[in-house]
Amino acid sequence: MDIAFDEVENIKNIKELSVVFYPDSFFYGLWDNEETLVKSDSHSNANFGKIYSILNKTYKLKIVRVMSTVKPYVHLPREDYEKKYYKDYFDGVYDVSKRKSSKKDVDDFLREEITTLHYMDKPIMKTMRDSKVSFKTAHISTALASYTFLVDAEVICFISESKIHICHAKNGKFQLYNQYHCEQAENYLYYILLVLDHFKLHPHEDAIHIGGHINVDSPLMKLLKAYIKNIIIVDENLNLPSSNHVAKQYYYDLYLCKSCV
Image 1: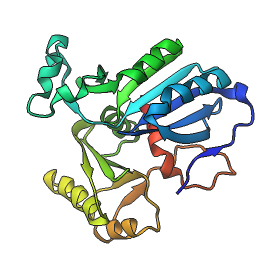
Image 2: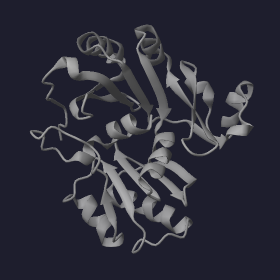
Image 3: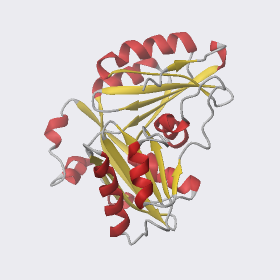
């Protein structure tokens, strides 16, 4: 499905850009002064510098929010974090020598004393710093944790690029974030049920919020609904032009980036 569109009516009303990075591509969205998403598109990561330069010159951006969905990531109590030991926190989790061309990045949770460590590609960070536009960065795990607090949800799932990202919070306390590769519909169901079972949540009682590349009439949704009775599509707070008829949940990553980065 092509979810790119351009409904910009007045370039002077565009001041904010959201960019979501995946392993090989990025998805961006422009927001007008009424916080409506008016343009989106995706490109190869290799083209980010060129595309960003065009966007910044065209729209005179004031703020850019950048969200990474890429491994590796580590969460730890904020009081335990020491900058000099950054790489050591990944021991046994990920070989950080694979990210030699990346910059270390650090996010703080919105309402808890938890820190996320992750990496951003150096060319991306250089592009942002050279542009002199104010920008913020975060990992999707930090953003999803913040979103659970904002909407008072216990389980949030985001589906994109054959992956499901799952975040769980209980009574306002972060419990889990993980991302899983899924080859077929049954894989998505398996990982959701795995998380529910681990935290003693009931698929017939507890609500599951889902956003991303999933249609309400798709075979995947029909499979999930056969086992999970309370599925909430995450789209209620996202504003799109009236002429855009793509389901709102397809832009959930851009909205997550805007609202929680």
